[in-house]
Amino acid sequence: MARRLSVFGSSVLLFPLLVCAQFKLTPGQESQTQQPTQAAQTASTSTSSGLVSGKEFAVPASGQWTDTGIEVKPGDKVTITGSGTLQFAGSGAVGPEGLARTWADVMQALPLNKAGRGALIARIGNDPAVVPFLVGAKKQFTVTQPGHLFLGVNLANDESLDGNYKTEIQVTPAGANVAKPVELKFDAALLDKVPRRVADAQGNPGDMVNFILIGSQRQMLDAFANGGWVQVDKSTGEAVAHAILSTLQKQSYLEMPMSVLYLYGRPQDYGMARAEPISVVQTRNHLRAWKAPFQIDGQDVWVGAATHDLGFEKDQRNGNITHHIDPNVDDERDFVKQSLTDGGGVAATTYVLPKDPVQEAKTATGGSFHSDGRVVVMQLRSN
Image (cartoon, rainbow, N blue to C red; front, side, top):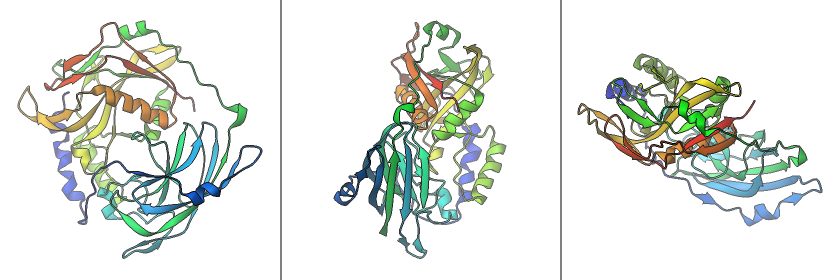
């Protein structure tokens, strides 16, 4: 994969400018999960209509997730209310909305980087692709994907505080009006219109095309945003301005540019990334997407290549430093599918094997990768 250091090298230099305070960085370890307490289990009641009413939980102030044991389904209406306070050294008591973000939070890795430390948060499912969301004092929402409901506090993995939040959860089942799953029918012959691999500016073959999205530009952008992805900056100059603005707004800068690759004779239309503060320089989930020159049943088609940067290696073409990708590119393909699905942006999916699949190859920079050769096709959900 062609990732020339000149594209992001200047952006790397931005980070010393953004550090306004010294603090301990936390390792990006997967949070552990606590099981529901006996008190929470016995507080649950159900009505004849299926309403789960007054199920209460005490959510401890730690970097762990609490499994409520509540299984939610698409169409369920959920209301979560939170109360209580936590004690921060030097900041006093804070409620479920969390602390106001500070300069230190710009570089801090939290489960939900846009929310303040100590905020009450939740997630549905325990897959790494799931994006947490803010609950605060009250949150009402309609479920889009099935899974267990988890509650937590927006703290680093190794943080813990005195106190806990008391929460109450009400679930109104969707009933019989839930939309039936969409059956995705995809003609494998359409893959003849899709190149197997992207290329660098010199025409050297690079990453394999491993996903296809069917839907409008708005549907595509919403699906990525709700799945936790950000649209990366297109140039170093744009990155500098964006990084400064993000810092002034006390938000983490995650939109570092990526190198330009080509498909259908043009650069990528969109670059997307999922990463954590600081580590974005070295490791991130990322992808490039191009609008295809054809439609399916009157709908736009987006073709893309997704890989996971794990560090740095030597560019075999010129000896420069470039990113090293996870050679098992199928994991990143499936991560894209899972994150967009968990975010509610996908109506149906299928996997298709081209007649000339890419299963063993090298990137444009000389790194090797392998795949089962399948392309995941996703029908985007209508708004």
